[in-house]
Length: 290
Ligand code: AHG
Ligand code: MN
Ligand code: MN
Image (cartoon, rainbow, N blue to C red; front, side, top):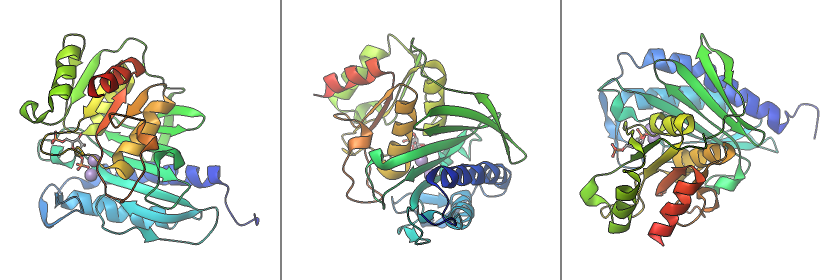
C-alpha cells in the first residue's frame, strides 16, 4: 500500500468526522425544507426538500474522502463511483430517516453504513456503521468491530458520552411498524405476547425507536406485512447498518429467519423485514415465524 493511501481506519474516521459536522448543518437546514418536492425516491416515496438537500450535502462531502470509492443513497437510483483508490470503501446512506416526522416536528436520523465491498453488499461486509439522532440533543452512535460509542454533537464537534454501549440485560420497550390488520397472523401472535411484557415505544422514525431499544433494551421491528411481504425498510441503507450496530452492542438482528447481515443482496434498493433487539426477543420472534 503506497504512503498516500489512507488506512481503512483512517478512512472510516474521516467518514464519521464528516458526518458529525455535516449533521449540525443538516439539523439547521431542516428549517424551511419541510415541504415535498415533485419527485419520488427509488422506493417510490415522495421526497421532501430536506431529503434531497441532505443527500446532496452528504454525497458531495463523503465522495471526496480519499478511500471512499462508492456512494449510494436511499434517495438516488444509482450508486456513484467516486474514486479508484484500493482498498476502497463504499458508503450507503439514508440521509434523513423518518422524514415523515418533519411535518410533526418529531425525531429523525441519518444512517451511514460503510462496506468494504461494492454495493449492493451483504451486511457482513460492513466494517463500520453509524447513525445520527436529531433529538432534543443531536447524538451519534458509532459502531466498529471494537464496539459501540455514543457521542453528543455540537458545533460540528463530537464528544464521547458513552463507551462500549451494550443493550441492557432487562428489556423494557418495543415498537412494531405497520398496521395491526396488515400483520400476518404469526407477527400478530408475537406482538400480542410481548405487549404484555414490554412498554410500547413507536415514533415513526426507525432511528428514534432503535435508540430507545439501545438505551432501555427491547425490540424494534418493521415486519413483513400482508401488503408488503418484504416489509418497508431498505437492506443496504437501514437494515444492514442498524443490524450491525445492534449486533455490535450485544443484541441480535433478523429478517425473520437469519441475521440481517447474512441476507444475500440482489438490488441496492431491496427491502427487508427488520427485527432488532435483545437476543431473547429476536430468538422468540424467529420461533414464532418458523
Ligand atoms: P425514511 O424516512 O428514511 O423513508 O424512513 C422511514 C421509515 C423508518 O424510519 C420508520 O421506521 C418507518 O419508515 C415508519 O414507517 P410508518 O410510517 O409506516 O410507520
Ligand atoms: Mn429510513
Ligand atoms: Mn430516508
